[in-house]
Image 1 (cartoon, rainbow, N blue to C red):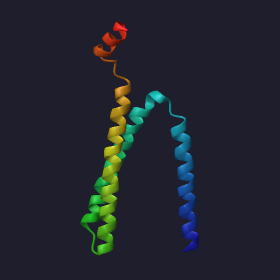
Image 2: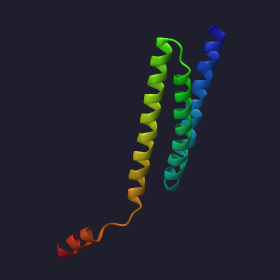
Image 3: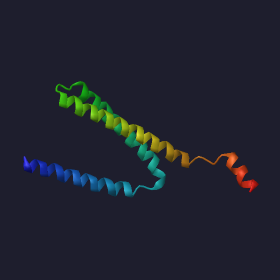
Length: 104
């Protein structure tokens, strides 16, 4: 049991390190497509968590399944909010702001 836990911990730590290294090297212009891709992956995770919740037999499985669905939903919604905010950065400024700047 201890050996398997050590293997899982090693894979987790390596995944974290590799993920940080990969995301840190992504140019700013590619962050929005990267977020959109991760939202698609999180959507798959949400569907998987709903399937697991639907097959729950015990109260513990139901609670954990519900938490999985809740957290996956928050992750998907949060990803879309961040993507929307990032896309707002690329839109041109409104004409009202330009008129206010010209008046000053």
